[in-house]
Length: 126
Image (tube, rainbow, N blue to C red):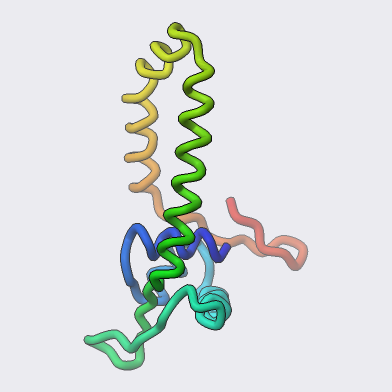
């Protein structure tokens, strides 16, 4: 959960706590606890919102940004190694599928984050 929230902050930039909670599909108190833990670990900093001192804006620290970008680089290197193992026909198939995959990513961005659902005392993310 922390890495997902950090990823949002690194790639989307600083945002109010409530917006981060909505992006992650959790309630504000849940995100507040997560942000507090990440703050203790030196991964985020909190400050009062410039337009509303009662609201909190959360930002990723340099350390968090380095952590997220290093993980992304590892995933990309792994993907590159896997792509090198594809046959020429497999690469052509992948290239033909790229427009559909890009459309899927765009469509996912327009869908609101899922709501949490309480089931038998546990939260489930649909």
